[in-house]
Image 1 (spheres, rainbow, N blue to C red):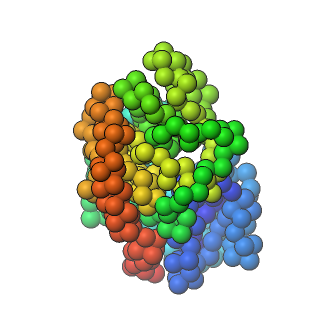
Image 2 (cartoon, rainbow, N blue to C red; image 1 turned 90 degrees about the horizontal axis):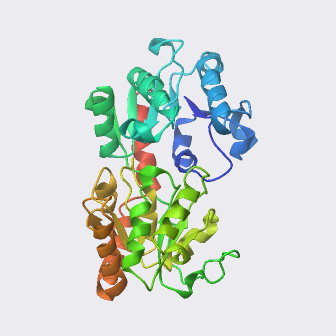
Image 3 (cartoon, rainbow, N blue to C red; image 1 turned 90 degrees about the vertical axis):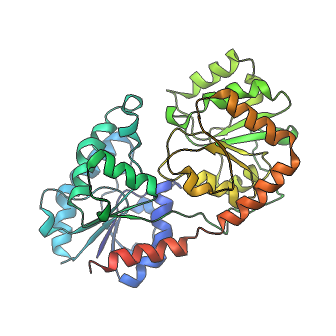
Length: 364
């Protein structure tokens, strides 16, 4: 079996973390890994592939070309019986009978909100559709993603294997440590809510910013990479609503500091309009942080009965009421904390890894 890790980056993205946490479990299948030096894997563990396949749009296009031809050749040279790709990319040029694949699909968000996305929606509309159609089986990270695959691609649900993700339980734990953020030394002097993620439109950060007008004694911390398309717009919106001094854009928070940032927060605010899984919800619960999230897509699968749900994530008033309730009700915070810690224990990479291996073994 070949495992295609050519997309791995040297920074912790969601799909990178997914693959790296599966590796200890895949070892029992004695796979051959394909990866670039940027993956930081032990060089003795993988066949090196070109290093220019990961960065930006051009890197993605180069990787798609490499996948169609060089990856197909490597499959034949290794006399492989199966290709496992932890993202929905696989050779289409050689046909299903000459390259058997199992792939993972994490979400189809660009198809659900096509006006929010550029060329990437065509990648999902045409290429990913064909990859999933040609695969022996498709692993997906939630029942919600499975439903989207059926809805958008017409692929039979029998071909899909929903396997939930997990969090790093050794890292995401309650802590009393103060977040070490040199650029924001006074961050925790005022009670704060936290949002995690990129400021892209479907993450729906505007209602949370607007809701801050209802909670004058608290701050909102937005932790995620800055985006020149959207971050200035969100800052201007906060100024327009008169809350700019209490909305902090951290841009980048080191992975090591996330448990402390979450643990000190009143709650994680996660009103996303759609998610394939929603890993920040699970990470927050594991830190004992109350969660406010949307009752939509995969988020109820992750949070269960351990979150404060809002039915309409676009409703800033409803979101503000939820935030105000948590800010002023210590008993509610305590109940959500206990429920979240209990809920988080239901997810583990051991379960995810074993379920993934069970799928792959069917084709070996």
